[in-house]
Image (cartoon, rainbow, N blue to C red; front, side, top):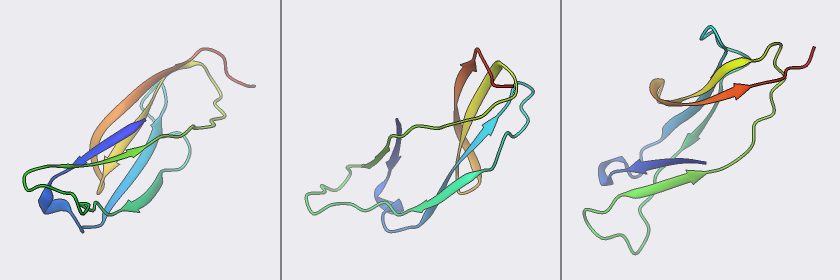
Length: 92
């Protein structure tokens, strides 16, 4: 699960959220996946509160070798964090 926290000044502003998978040598594996999101504050919003955008899903990856990988998170092209994972068995 990925959660993005938005401030009031980000409400109504389009942002690009992307995931980039990197391999054991930090090389990009596969294609970068991106989509647009627009944070919105709801009708019960109280000044000073932040908005939260949550997304959950599964990735299906075909990888050539085991090792340490990561899913890099980018917001508007800037690195915002990564999610490390380990591949213990890969297809041939």
